[in-house]
Length: 249
Image (cartoon, rainbow, N blue to C red; front, side, top):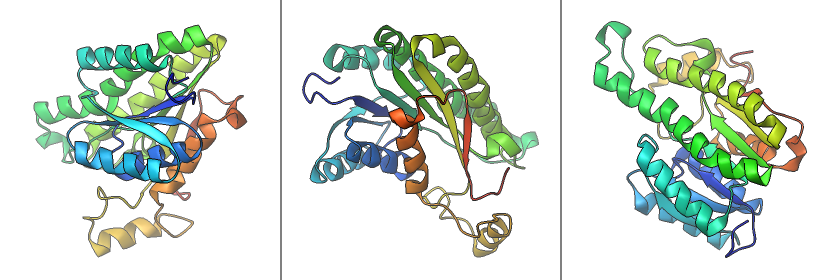
């Protein structure tokens, strides 16, 4: 619980825009004190915070690079001293650097794995000790349908997002006896600024592979996060929940 708000505390990484911003705002509406992580744009994070506060919620911004383990540990230590153990950790921060494998640069591979996979591992590791002592907590990884089905030109991204699935299943087995749950959400094509640059032909090709016939919204992912953050999902751990309109089953 937060000493300042007496609310359960949730931290969402990469919460300044897109899916992360929607998750942060939804958790604010669900009664959590939301810590809004950002890597570069404090302005965007403060805008998300203002929307949470205007809706009657509470929160704060917290800038750090999830790919830097020393920085992660220092920030989580400060959060634990101020608020106690997190009730919810949502590892949403991610990047994608697309390109064919034969042209994949080492630095692009390293950066993708650093943020998309190692960043989630660092944050999970930093959160778990306090969660275990409290004997409660929900860890939610935002992976991708690409981590399940693969995609040409996204080998590094697919490897990172698939790695999250195996990592989370292991965490669920390690921490379940201490009351800590860990699950994965795999969004499909969601309407964000990361997908708005697709051509019309690309969008039509995508829609042909989605049985429900439409592209998802960030709130579709946030709704599943809210469920996994709540006691309604108390008997769910180590699971992969697809939010993809049926494009992968």
